[in-house]
Image (tube, rainbow over all chains, first blue to last red; front, side, top):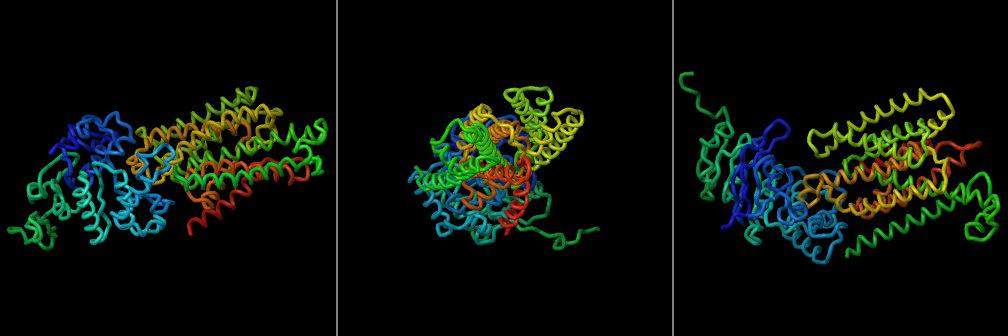
Length: 269
Length: 333
């Protein structure tokens, strides 16, 4: 399959602190690609570079063989949709209005929607199951409902690549699975490439085609869940004791945290 | 075409236009002379004696003043709306960011140098506001992007610095200009002529149009900078364009009216509560509603004192501050 995204030797620094060091990888079209790694490893910064929101200090990002540089934000927004890590606060709009905002890259300056825009928005709302919330105020929704609305908004952009930063954080179990299933359906229905940052290694192992493990702005390991998720690599990245065995429901690794009090006493101590 | 938004924008605009028109007529009717409403009505509708004293008071004094008040009210309301959206902060307005203070420093410098109001004092005021804007933005951002919390803090500090410069310049002044400056610092609409009004209109109208064209981008900015960027908004470009346009129109009005507070807080909040947060509706609403509001405030400033008049800034602050506290409490509930 052809690559939809090519990241080449990307480095990024905020002031004096370097957050990304010489990152290179590519993502295939229609791939479910999940970036994992400890806090502060540069995952979110990498997502911003991929989405064209942050410009890399050195290196290049190519989208379907064409560099991101020099493309207008609007043109980029038609190719890549972003679901940021933090949900917006004090949004004075109702659900339907928020979802329709996702059509902005296709609208004129004043954002007047066409019947086609309304149709796409309705489809996106029914796809994520928020149609019945259409008239509710965004601020009155639960965190999980808001996330589904924000994803419907991103789907409205009809992107070829969907970029999500920890979309399942602070959601209950049912909502976590729901969001991951939505992405899986989006990928299989529309062939959308999914690039996601996640802290949940087991969820990542279940859904990802390939994983990218980062630490301190560098790539430690990349490959299938089976290749990346072994305990030497993980302990090196996270610096804690883990048990890795087989997942009973799917042929992928399963990661279990081993708390200090469960460790056998050290011999000779 | 989006019939829903177009219809709503038109409805709200027409409604507030009517409010503005009635305020303007009220402003033309009221004053120390020409209390005979039939005479005024006859003059306004084109009948009556065009050379009478009443006629010259209405056309030469009251009309320019009503027009000036409406343009300044529109500008300050719109300025408040833009800053509240851009900084995602309900208490933001041109004063909080130090832009009014900066243009006031420039304007007072112009007055002390004995320059004419236009283009002398006006360009000094604009230079002052742009300098403070640059200062505030460069203090607040290590990188080029505009950060909201540090922007507010920087604005407060720059404002404090501007106030001290203003007070320093006032303390150096001994002659009759002192009264002018002091009155002007409180917000004053009493010195007006038709030519100034026309020039100001020529500056403000393009600014209003530019801001209206950014209405949908401002809606998207309410979702947060990253999300707006992800939906195709060039956040940095739009922020700078909005800040630049707003400081241009605010500095243009500051050298005519002096420092008028709370218009930019009260009107956007009130209209948001009444008509919702869509900027495509709110921007024209702020223009007409803010205009009507300042015309009415000026009416009170002209008629309430037994002798002479008081600075309109006193009225806007007296109405504005309590109303704002009320609005804030209500919107939090």
